[in-house]
Length: 257
Image (cartoon, rainbow, N blue to C red; front, side, top):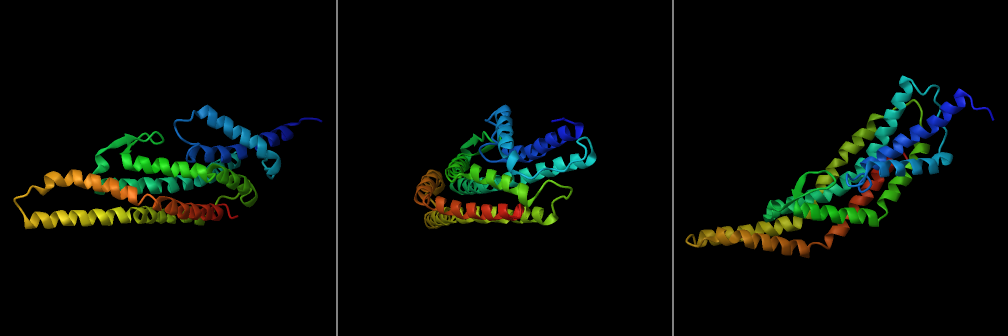
């Protein structure tokens, strides 16, 4: 078999273009895209997956590797991978936001930890919810599901000279409302309970001004917040399943499957 420049360019294009889409997903996905995982390991994982799926995906039609059209194709593959990975971030950050809301209202927001994935200080309750959501994401085979989405996207969104339509970006942005809705619905029960507790403290202060209610109110509020979190922890899995199903449906719409 004679290896001409056209054949070699085709082989390189058949590897580079799927590799950019798959690696963009891995770099931005929850768990696999964490800063604690070395970049070399993530790149090696992306290379292995690309080599494994190359025979099953359509061939890319590229006339020249060094051209503006090829650069645009690579940029499009990166956008598709990042969009799918960003969906996983929205799902997990939903519960981080709920934990931050609960921590702020219960007085537990003073205890903060450094999030290893983002490097930012977040309340300990938000970090606890983040760990739970990440574990559930792995327990439900989340990485495997999104790897299946990225492989299926090569059939529904083949590599060719047509950029994504604006409706995909609009759907991803509009889906952000479910992030705040789910976070508020998860934190609604603790917020209501803390509102009643603070309302009771206000009545006690009004009835007996000579009592220093606020001196004992802060530790009672923190203790009550921990108890309420423990009592409402059973709703966590229910809200996660609903949010996970929404994420699956959104991913299907993004890749037109």
